[in-house]
Length: 563
Ligand code: GLY
Image 1 (tube, rainbow, N blue to C red):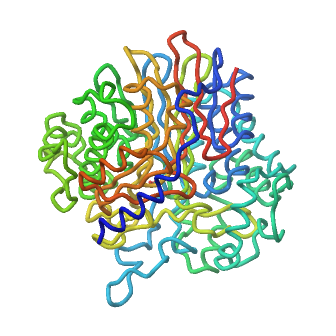
Image 2 (image 1 turned 30 degrees about the vertical axis):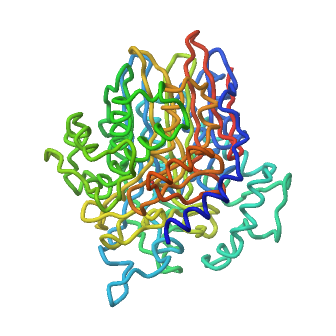
Image 3 (image 1 turned 90 degrees about the horizontal axis):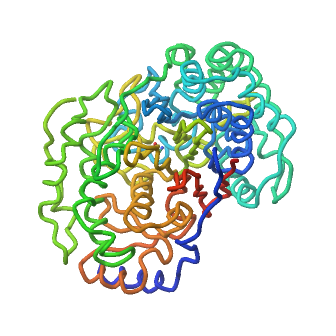
């Protein structure tokens, strides 16, 4: 039966073919570049770099600008991860992921029979974790910033106060969310004052401008104390949420030791737990390095099969071993051990799909909407910053803090609300990622920087929930194994396997006719993923002549800018 359904899917999906060129070269600049999900945010970051700001200065300005112009995922009510590599080669990773409120508990999304209450962790006030973004930006700026804080927040204040024109895609998304905005808000949010948005309409966010002014003038205190904190807590009380003044006061982002691993001639620098991204990416690239994927060629059944089988095994590990390291002993070293990673491929057959039931997480040596958005920055000194930030789903919990005009995240759904029960990305988890007060929920965000021969080579990351890791993995392979330019590597069609459910998601045309049939004959279960595409990435590649090439994702309004 499954085979018959798969066949049906295949025939539908074979009709589609990707019209994006894998040989396209993106914007090339001499010295500095910003690639983000919105042209206005990329322009804000570039302006900061032109004024002599460094990559962290630009990252702060872009984060706040995205909170205005890209409210689906840009945020001050969410969280994220920042990975950086200084021009001297030193690295750092900042965790400003949301935390569970103190009143959260393991079974808070279950009914009296122990069943998951649909959408409770996804929509509405109870879905929100304590936001980390503002603290994260303050902390990053304190350590690495060079320009005055206020100058970095001001462009966002201006965008919110003066307004900006909506792109076609953004207008469509706001219209689609209208019903949920009405349903989940205690007061009518600004976004639905208008009935139907269209491309080119100017959208102004007066309350958000006031909140950003507080942040500009008072830094951390402008969000976690005073009027804004009062508005958040009042909103929680009206809507039955959990976040208190104490939760806000207690929120602090954390500098963590980045995941750094050598894979062939590359050094991968990425995010450690509570993201699963860095570990999973290193595992995938380490497995891939054992096979001549360049020789096997892009999009062939041989290459694609190997990649799917690697993904299946790596996501099995993710489900069992990964969670917030402040609460759960994550066996980081064991999971990154090359011998361990290779052992996970035992049972791999070049001609047959493995059933996910035959695959389980390994036993490493003990030790310790989807919507998200990524931006990549390189400044004229050669410092690089890779940031992925999120509200979780598109427009988060769909809840605006009344009078403050910003959206709250629904990051609580990234916890495993019940062992084995899939979340909105159909990811499963267990003890490592169970809810606990003050704990950070496991993430797939994979902000990454690559070095080649000791020099900065690539800055890359993506949105896309569970598909973030496979998106970043495939883009890197597109460049290092298949020789694509950065833009072509981002354009290229994507596919995804995450162990459970046991199927391969693919974009239109991503697998191609012959490969699709061959994979199906090997026993892969193939489901199409057509709407919106898989992931939305932003990459910068340092070319052999030292110039920078941007890869801005055509799946969104993303734009590269620089000089
Ligand atoms: N909210 C998506 C992630 O962090 O993986």
